[in-house]
Amino acid sequence: EIVLTQSPGTLSLSPGERATLSCRASQAVNSPYFAWYQQKPGQVPRLVIYGVSSRATGIPDRFSGSGSGTDFTLTISRLEPEDFAVYFCQQYGSSPRTFGQGTKVEI
Amino acid sequence: QVQLVESGGTLVKPGGSLRLTCAASGFTFSDYYMHWIRQAPGKGLEWVSFISGSSVHTYYADSVKGRFTISRDNAKNSLYLQMNNLRDEDTALYYCAREWSAFDIWGQGTVVTVSS
Image (tube, rainbow over all chains, first blue to last red; front, side):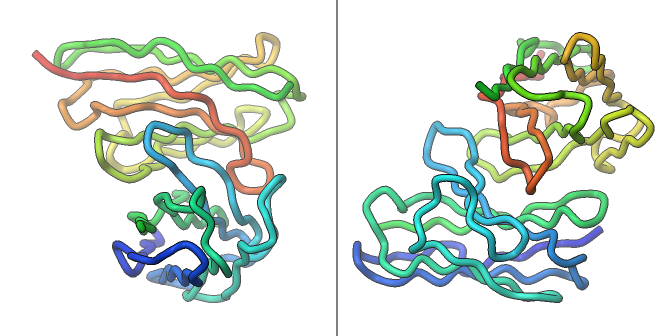
Protein backbone atom coordinates (compact mmCIF):
# COMPACT_ATOMS: atom_id res chain seq x y z
CA GLU A 1 0.00 0.00 0.00
CA ILE A 2 1.23 3.47 -0.88
CA VAL A 3 1.08 5.74 2.17
CA LEU A 4 0.70 9.45 1.41
CA THR A 5 1.95 11.98 3.94
CA GLN A 6 0.88 15.59 3.56
CA SER A 7 2.66 18.63 4.96
CA PRO A 8 2.10 20.89 6.64
CA GLY A 9 -0.95 19.80 8.59
CA THR A 10 -2.19 23.38 8.71
CA LEU A 11 -1.18 26.36 6.59
CA SER A 12 -2.10 29.78 7.94
CA LEU A 13 -2.07 32.39 5.21
CA SER A 14 -3.83 35.57 4.08
CA PRO A 15 -5.83 36.21 0.92
CA GLY A 16 -3.49 37.08 -1.93
CA GLU A 17 -0.64 34.95 -0.60
CA ARG A 18 0.82 31.87 -2.27
CA ALA A 19 0.06 28.44 -0.82
CA THR A 20 2.33 25.46 -1.35
CA LEU A 21 1.06 22.07 -0.19
CA SER A 22 3.22 18.96 -0.26
CA CYS A 23 2.46 15.27 -0.47
CA ARG A 24 5.08 12.57 -0.15
CA ALA A 25 4.46 8.94 -1.11
CA SER A 26 6.03 5.93 0.61
CA GLN A 27 6.90 4.52 -2.81
CA ALA A 28 6.83 5.79 -6.37
CA VAL A 29 3.37 6.58 -7.69
CA ASN A 30 2.39 5.20 -11.09
CA SER A 31 2.43 8.33 -13.18
CA PRO A 32 0.34 10.21 -13.90
CA TYR A 33 -2.26 8.89 -11.49
CA PHE A 34 -2.10 11.55 -8.81
CA ALA A 35 -4.83 13.95 -7.75
CA TRP A 36 -5.76 16.69 -5.32
CA TYR A 37 -9.21 17.34 -3.80
CA GLN A 38 -10.66 20.31 -1.97
CA GLN A 39 -13.18 19.91 0.82
CA LYS A 40 -14.98 22.72 2.59
CA PRO A 41 -16.87 22.15 5.87
CA GLY A 42 -20.06 20.21 5.31
CA GLN A 43 -19.38 19.75 1.61
CA VAL A 44 -18.47 16.89 -0.69
CA PRO A 45 -14.83 16.61 -1.79
CA ARG A 46 -14.22 18.31 -5.11
CA LEU A 47 -11.59 17.25 -7.62
CA VAL A 48 -9.06 20.05 -8.17
CA ILE A 49 -6.13 18.42 -9.99
CA TYR A 50 -5.86 15.06 -11.76
CA GLY A 51 -3.05 13.45 -13.70
CA VAL A 52 -0.54 15.33 -11.49
CA SER A 53 -1.04 18.67 -13.21
CA SER A 54 -4.36 18.86 -15.08
CA ARG A 55 -7.02 21.14 -13.66
CA ALA A 56 -10.48 19.68 -13.26
CA THR A 57 -13.50 21.33 -14.86
CA GLY A 58 -14.19 24.74 -13.43
CA ILE A 59 -10.98 25.00 -11.43
CA PRO A 60 -9.30 28.41 -11.87
CA ASP A 61 -5.78 28.67 -13.20
CA ARG A 62 -4.39 29.90 -9.88
CA PHE A 63 -4.34 26.19 -8.94
CA SER A 64 -1.45 24.13 -10.28
CA GLY A 65 -0.03 20.70 -9.58
CA SER A 66 3.41 19.26 -10.11
CA GLY A 67 5.67 16.41 -9.11
CA SER A 68 6.69 12.90 -9.94
CA GLY A 69 7.87 9.73 -8.28
CA THR A 70 7.27 10.25 -4.58
CA ASP A 71 6.96 14.02 -4.24
CA PHE A 72 4.00 16.08 -5.36
CA THR A 73 2.95 19.69 -4.85
CA LEU A 74 -0.26 21.69 -5.09
CA THR A 75 0.27 25.41 -5.50
CA ILE A 76 -2.36 28.11 -5.19
CA SER A 77 -0.73 31.20 -6.64
CA ARG A 78 -2.92 33.86 -4.98
CA LEU A 79 -5.35 32.73 -2.34
CA GLU A 80 -8.95 33.82 -2.71
CA PRO A 81 -11.37 33.69 0.25
CA GLU A 82 -13.12 30.66 -1.27
CA ASP A 83 -9.85 28.66 -1.35
CA PHE A 84 -9.66 28.26 2.41
CA ALA A 85 -10.45 24.58 2.88
CA VAL A 86 -8.89 21.17 3.50
CA TYR A 87 -6.94 19.64 0.62
CA PHE A 88 -6.33 15.92 0.21
CA CYS A 89 -3.84 14.28 -2.11
CA GLN A 90 -4.57 10.87 -3.66
CA GLN A 91 -2.87 8.26 -5.76
CA TYR A 92 -5.10 6.23 -8.05
CA GLY A 93 -2.50 4.31 -10.04
CA SER A 94 -2.40 1.26 -7.84
CA SER A 95 -4.64 -0.58 -5.41
CA PRO A 96 -5.57 0.18 -2.79
CA ARG A 97 -6.23 3.74 -3.82
CA THR A 98 -5.00 5.93 -0.98
CA PHE A 99 -5.47 9.46 0.32
CA GLY A 100 -3.24 11.71 2.34
CA GLN A 101 -4.45 12.86 5.74
CA GLY A 102 -5.17 16.39 4.52
CA THR A 103 -3.77 19.91 4.79
CA LYS A 104 -6.00 22.65 6.16
CA VAL A 105 -5.49 26.03 4.55
CA GLU A 106 -6.80 28.60 7.00
CA ILE A 107 -6.85 32.35 7.25
CA GLN B 1 -26.98 15.88 -15.50
CA VAL B 2 -24.32 13.61 -14.09
CA GLN B 3 -25.32 12.59 -10.59
CA LEU B 4 -24.70 10.03 -7.87
CA VAL B 5 -27.14 9.62 -5.00
CA GLU B 6 -26.38 7.38 -2.03
CA SER B 7 -28.96 5.88 0.29
CA GLY B 8 -29.29 3.23 2.96
CA GLY B 9 -27.33 4.74 5.79
CA THR B 10 -28.81 4.48 9.25
CA LEU B 11 -28.11 3.62 12.89
CA VAL B 12 -27.14 -0.03 13.34
CA LYS B 13 -25.87 -2.05 16.29
CA PRO B 14 -22.36 -3.53 16.39
CA GLY B 15 -22.35 -6.85 14.56
CA GLY B 16 -25.24 -5.79 12.40
CA SER B 17 -25.54 -5.53 8.62
CA LEU B 18 -26.48 -2.82 6.19
CA ARG B 19 -26.61 -2.36 2.42
CA LEU B 20 -25.81 0.98 0.87
CA THR B 21 -26.98 1.93 -2.60
CA CYS B 22 -25.60 4.50 -5.02
CA ALA B 23 -27.91 5.46 -7.89
CA ALA B 24 -26.15 6.85 -10.95
CA SER B 25 -27.63 9.00 -13.70
CA GLY B 26 -26.51 11.14 -16.61
CA PHE B 27 -23.69 8.91 -17.85
CA THR B 28 -23.03 5.40 -19.17
CA PHE B 29 -22.64 3.70 -15.80
CA SER B 30 -21.10 0.49 -17.12
CA ASP B 31 -18.14 2.37 -18.61
CA TYR B 32 -16.74 3.38 -15.24
CA TYR B 33 -14.93 1.98 -12.25
CA MET B 34 -16.91 2.91 -9.16
CA HIS B 35 -15.68 3.42 -5.63
CA TRP B 36 -16.85 3.72 -2.05
CA ILE B 37 -15.00 6.16 0.19
CA ARG B 38 -15.81 6.97 3.80
CA GLN B 39 -15.11 9.81 6.17
CA ALA B 40 -15.39 9.37 9.91
CA PRO B 41 -16.60 12.44 11.84
CA GLY B 42 -13.88 15.08 11.84
CA LYS B 43 -11.44 12.82 10.01
CA GLY B 44 -9.95 12.46 6.55
CA LEU B 45 -10.97 10.41 3.54
CA GLU B 46 -10.57 6.64 3.65
CA TRP B 47 -10.91 4.68 0.44
CA VAL B 48 -13.03 1.55 1.01
CA SER B 49 -13.54 -0.43 -2.19
CA PHE B 50 -13.80 -0.37 -5.97
CA ILE B 51 -15.45 -2.40 -8.69
CA SER B 52 -14.70 -2.40 -12.40
CA GLY B 53 -17.34 -1.64 -14.99
CA SER B 54 -18.01 -5.29 -15.77
CA SER B 55 -17.67 -6.37 -12.12
CA VAL B 56 -14.65 -8.53 -13.00
CA HIS B 57 -12.33 -6.65 -10.67
CA THR B 58 -12.99 -5.70 -7.07
CA TYR B 59 -10.67 -4.54 -4.32
CA TYR B 60 -11.07 -3.74 -0.65
CA ALA B 61 -9.24 -1.83 2.03
CA ASP B 62 -7.76 -4.12 4.65
CA SER B 63 -10.03 -2.54 7.26
CA VAL B 64 -13.15 -3.93 5.57
CA LYS B 65 -11.89 -7.02 3.74
CA GLY B 66 -13.99 -10.06 4.54
CA ARG B 67 -16.83 -7.95 5.97
CA PHE B 68 -17.88 -5.68 3.09
CA THR B 69 -18.87 -6.68 -0.44
CA ILE B 70 -19.12 -4.30 -3.36
CA SER B 71 -21.38 -5.05 -6.31
CA ARG B 72 -23.19 -3.29 -9.12
CA ASP B 73 -26.19 -3.74 -11.40
CA ASN B 74 -25.48 -1.97 -14.67
CA ALA B 75 -29.03 -2.51 -15.88
CA LYS B 76 -30.25 -0.51 -12.90
CA ASN B 77 -27.35 1.99 -12.92
CA SER B 78 -26.73 1.11 -9.30
CA LEU B 79 -23.73 0.45 -7.07
CA TYR B 80 -24.01 -1.37 -3.76
CA LEU B 81 -22.01 -1.93 -0.61
CA GLN B 82 -23.07 -4.82 1.59
CA MET B 83 -21.64 -4.27 5.05
CA ASN B 84 -21.65 -7.13 7.54
CA ASN B 85 -20.32 -7.52 11.07
CA LEU B 86 -20.27 -3.76 11.52
CA ARG B 87 -17.98 -2.22 14.11
CA ASP B 88 -17.98 1.10 15.94
CA GLU B 89 -15.10 2.24 13.75
CA ASP B 90 -17.22 1.84 10.61
CA THR B 91 -19.21 4.90 11.69
CA ALA B 92 -18.76 7.41 8.88
CA LEU B 93 -20.25 9.31 6.01
CA TYR B 94 -20.05 6.95 3.02
CA TYR B 95 -19.58 8.41 -0.44
CA CYS B 96 -19.72 6.73 -3.79
CA ALA B 97 -17.56 8.16 -6.55
CA ARG B 98 -16.93 7.65 -10.23
CA GLU B 99 -13.39 7.15 -11.45
CA TRP B 100 -12.51 8.68 -14.77
CA SER B 101 -9.94 11.38 -14.42
CA ALA B 102 -9.40 10.51 -10.77
CA PHE B 103 -12.62 10.61 -8.73
CA ASP B 104 -14.39 13.24 -10.76
CA ILE B 105 -17.97 12.78 -9.56
CA TRP B 106 -19.02 12.22 -5.95
CA GLY B 107 -22.37 11.68 -4.34
CA GLN B 108 -23.59 13.64 -1.32
CA GLY B 109 -22.97 10.69 0.98
CA THR B 110 -25.04 8.63 3.38
CA VAL B 111 -24.40 8.40 7.12
CA VAL B 112 -23.75 5.08 8.81
CA THR B 113 -23.70 5.08 12.59
CA VAL B 114 -22.68 1.92 14.44
CA SER B 115 -23.61 2.11 18.08
CA SER B 116 -25.34 0.05 20.74
